[in-house]
Length: 379
Image 1 (tube, rainbow, N blue to C red):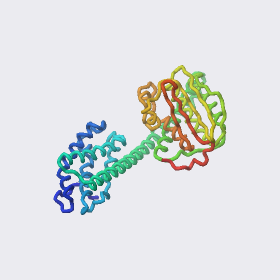
Image 2 (cartoon, rainbow, N blue to C red):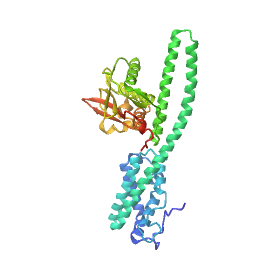
Image 3 (cartoon, one colour):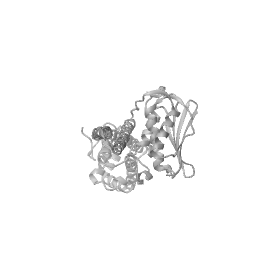
Image 4 (cartoon, rainbow, N blue to C red):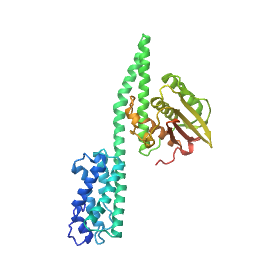
């Protein structure tokens, strides 16, 4: 594909404003680079060729778009912005908002530099600049997301191969030790190894499911009718054995159609999260509330609150709060994203309420019957 990346400023197809824009291209891009390095943390250490990327091409095509007689007067017909977003995802540590910010800076840099050189665009030309940059933002972010999705899929494939196979081998060895050992101590140690292997396998499955859901696919649910109260009692019993007598569940029942194993893993994640980040000696409260053909399953712990600006990030894969990053117990940051994927796949949601005085409560809110929602589209 040939990009009109460096049109002749004297071309008869370019309008006078476009010719003047091309004469000011180096001034605009130089000022944009200065602003980008100052305002965008990820841009500060990038070498010039990587930072400037496709911006010169885009600027030239934008100048062409201002010219009614030019073949690119509609501003469309190339993948410059998409390539820019893809390279940002592959070659830098940019977040999507950083990509958006780059184009926002470019917008105002163009207007400021052109104005400083007595080139004021009219209403039509300003509208073209704004529309062109808005479209570039959409295309760049979409390409960024596609590349990120491909990288996640590649990571999942490597994870499945690199962790599952040796884990299976170690599990078989531990099972043989448990069966053949005569010493009660060795049998006990083998039991512990098998227990931790099971925990690791569930973590891997949580990661796989979370990545699948983040890519837009719905979790595959195995729906059956059961009492959610029995499931909460089961998780409480197992949690008491693992963490001590801190679990409090006043009882309750809620019969419905759900995926039992998925909800069990989700509840285990919420309880484990409460144990990690709540007060070490305080009880952890679990509850069920049925209303309007829905059920809320809540897990509450006292302790330091989640900062308001971090409440959404805890549900994103690989994003962790400051407390999680600084804590002694580390992980992949996939527990809560998995819980969200389970709740949304059941046609519901996961919410959080957190404050210094009231502690932290996570609530899974789902319909009593998930069957009508298991094939609903994801966002």
